[in-house]
Image (cartoon, rainbow, N blue to C red; front, top):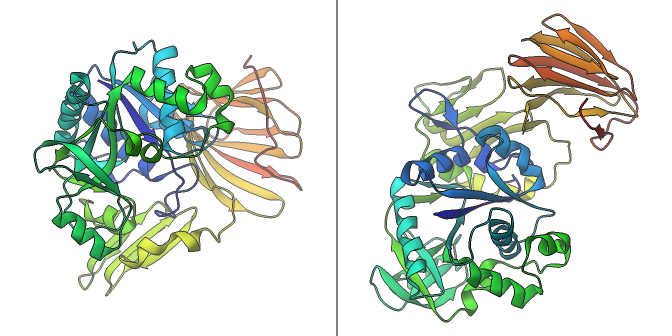
Length: 437
């Protein structure tokens, strides 16, 4: 299969574990058989590989998520990067052109598009293979997967099929309804629109050319800012006459809120936390190195990270976004292609960060004009380069980096350093990159 995984959105509804860089799909909460925690994107990626080890997987994402994807899936993963955030139609258009022009996928081949973050079992990906075959059969220009609804949800759009067969022509689409209307749709046999599509590559590229005037990857990339900000549903699906839907009746969850996320957690406590015996339906997700104690609580989620602390009734947690929108602070935790950083303290003229480099990785070679830095190595071994001069580093080493100096760290083993920045104007954009010596 050729699969495009859509990885977009900002991290608002799962604050404080998510932010503009670390969206919900990168939060590590699913415990594997080896006892380590994995994220939604890692889980989905491995599930696809278990069903089709030869699948060509391309992740369509924004620039801000590239480092997190490489950190969690490795640097060899195929990534199609949007120059700026748009809606699903331009993202899919760019990714399809990338498949053909960069990866060399023939136009006659089929493509399956799906979100990167559904909580599903492997049966879902077996169903994607059937959807791929449906698109390949040519009986429809566009094949959708419709999720059998389990309750009258107001969060999803609905697909009304012509009949109740496993595969049916699509009668019409319905917008996100209120609960009463959702019940009526379900009585009519409607399915949730899970944002899963399959089509031949040439079909989509022709639609892209019709609507934008472009069809090749280079032109789409160059003119991306001028593309319409429109969903795939509005731009393509709702206008297509030869369109079919395939029912999926297996387990499926969109883990977009704390309420739905905690429903699938296998542990009540992730990180340092204690629940006393009077707590009922309480979950703790703690990324801080301090304990959290909960007593006598019911139906509550407690989440703590460098970004902040959330204590919320689970149902009320669905309404978090407008409150998080009021916060204005720099990102305090992010995973990068080379490791991660965590802000430990922020003052008016100083910033203290814990930097972790993965074995064999390095920072970009860069400089800052308006701040000095001091690195204290606390774990591991590696090398530092300051203005072209190399030196070995190990626990206890202290390295001073004056403003204007080019510098980087390289890790032999996992390397941890405390970085103290000082200056009157410490800003994220004060960074100039250079070719690595």
